[in-house]
Length: 295
Ligand SMILES: [Zn+2]
Image (cartoon, rainbow, N blue to C red; front, side, top):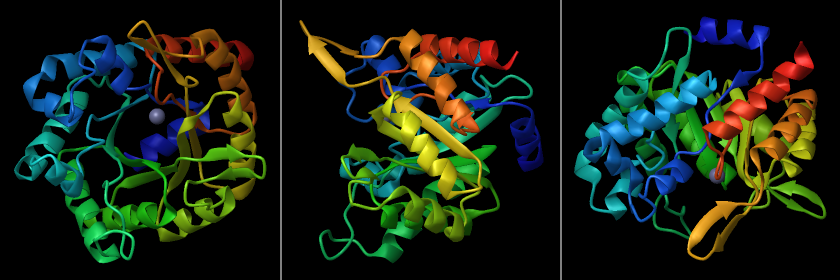
């Protein structure tokens, strides 16, 4: 599968899906505290969202297991369901996945701070990432994506945990903010340091997702491209959320996002998808824009 994925990377820009949370909001599930529970409670809704992304043209769809770390689940009293919810999450993407396309198992932050600021050790953190990864790999994902990581230390614990869990294609994606001095994680780490450390720890591919809109992600892509030879994935947000008359929407339109996506591709991204606020409409628009340029 690893070979198939790299083969496809040589041929084209690989397209990832857009947001899950935004689609759940549209489906009236905004108040759901633990969206991962929907894998068991509303499997048809989750399957439908996955299918819509594949139909929009996504090559890779990410499982609804962002909150599937045992530490995160324990905060909501769901630790007993760790295996079931992660396994079910992978199954729902797998059964929506057409031939020749891919299923990514999603790993998000564990929601805990490391000692001395928090109460858990690096070793404990790594073990929890390993536990989730073992279920995702056993359930049959084609690749694992660690995403929306705000701290390099946690991202590295996740990469090492996944590496311990098994032999799987692994993408690690950090979240950066833009400051007047450049792009940094919330913990102050720069792009080059993140890209180098993640690759050294065993990530096959490096990414950046969330927080930044598509316009700011163009400069970010240039800097990430200059920092690593690994394939890179960029998944911007559709701008910032705005709530008006009780309805939340995102600032950017699909057309605007798509025009920037073409520039992100030109800046060296091998893979592009969307984070918060993006929908199948965004994925469809970005594919049309990218194809226009490459024909
Ligand atoms: Zn996001």
